[in-house]
Every structure is written in C-alpha cells, then in structure tokens.
Image 1 (cartoon, rainbow, N blue to C red):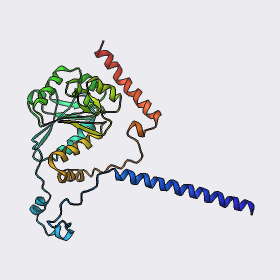
Image 2: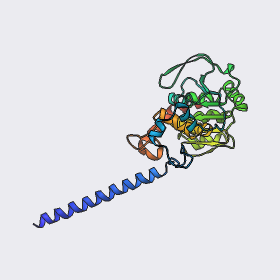
Image 3: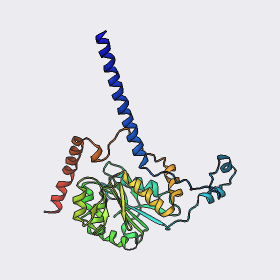
Image 4: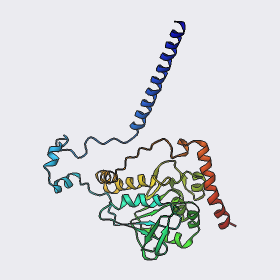
Length: 297
C-alpha cells in the first residue's frame, strides 16, 4: 500500500509537470502567432463596414470582384531583371522570380554577362537569353547570392560597373543572401542598413560601409536586402505589397500557397544546434577562404 501511494504521488507529479510544460508550449506558440500581422478588419468590406457573404461574392461578376479588390499601385513596375552567374544559389533567384513574375504588367527575366546556360551551385542549368550589355534600365534589379563564385563576382569590375549603371535609374535595387556582398562591392550599401546571409554577416557588411540588421529582410530607401536564400521570397512579397498593395500581395502569396510551416525549428544560427552551426561555418570557410586568398594575394 505504501509503495502504491508513492507511485500515485510520482504519477501525479509527472502529469502535473507535463501539463505545465504543454501549457508553456501553447503559450509560446500563442506569443509567436501574436507577432504575425493579422488581417485588418476593414479590408474589402461593404460601404457600411460589414463583410461580404460568400453568397454576395458568388453573385458578383469577375469585373466586380476585380474592382472590389483593386488598389491603386503605389509605383509602376515594368521591368524586373534577375542577375545570374555560375555558382549562384538557385532559390535565391527562383524564389523572387516566382513572386515577381505574377506582377502585371511587369516583365521578369534573367540576365547574365553572356548568353547561354548558367549553372547554379547545385547544378541547375538555366538558359539566359539577355546579356548585361543589352540592358540599360531596370525598375527592379535582383542580385542573388552564392559562396565562392559570389566572392569572385565582387571583384568583377565589368559586372560591378553594370550594376552601378543600372542603379542610377532603378526604382529598387535588391539582393538575396550574399548577393549583398556584390551590392556592397559596387559601393551601393555604404551608409545603408542591410542584411545578408548569417555567415560573417556583420563583418562582411561593415567592410562595405553598411550596418548589418539581423532581419529576414530590410530596406533603406530603394535598397532592399534579404537574409539567406529563402528570405528572398519574404523580401519579394514585401516589395509587391509595397508597390502593388496588400490585396495583390495576398493574391501572389495565395497563388504560391506560401504558408511556411517547417517540420522542426531551425534555419538560423539562433535556432540551430551550435555544433551544426559551427560545422556549416567551417564548410563555408572551406569554399570561400581559398578564393579570398587567390584574389587578394
């Protein structure tokens, strides 16, 4: 009987601890959810402020629905060029391309130093039919990142001069991941707040006269920069929202069904096991340091 009582007490204590822990997890999730921007109550409503019913929406014509959700653009975008070079990270370019290609009437296309197949770091080959020599103006320039080949691009004066030329008249000059190194090498981020891939981020941007901001994406004037790889999608959606309005950005986001729900926590040094983070840093060192020594004898 004595042992049974002890067992019951232990069971109650364990159940209590488990319940408290579950409560903490729920509270944490609630707090995380609270940081997300909620849908404004007064968007797409009737003149009296009430919401449309599904039946009312079903009775509307296509033109009426379009008129209901139309928002006057804050800016007009006609040309969006995404720079490709051998060794770029594929999602750095393809993520923004998937977002921006939905921006009407803008034309989104790839650009490279030479026409032909450009190969990403993971072997994806993309046919590029437009060269930097053929492009004199862009409304939006997107510069993706990579590793060693991105650092090589920071020393390519022909490429940097073209970027400077485009930037003189662009409405938005943007980068994804370590693409910020290229913008920095072109002198465009001096005195600006910017973000980039987490690898040696603060030192790299400081070397280009920029101030590192540890965010998924940020902008300082017309310069929009994003953190590593997938953050380029966030930045692109934010720029669609900025130029075309929230309804249009909502449409693009829904069209892509972009509702990230990772199977586990990670994706940043703060959320990744320190051993894995250190290993990844050393891997980046392995690819980049020899190129740095080669180009800076």
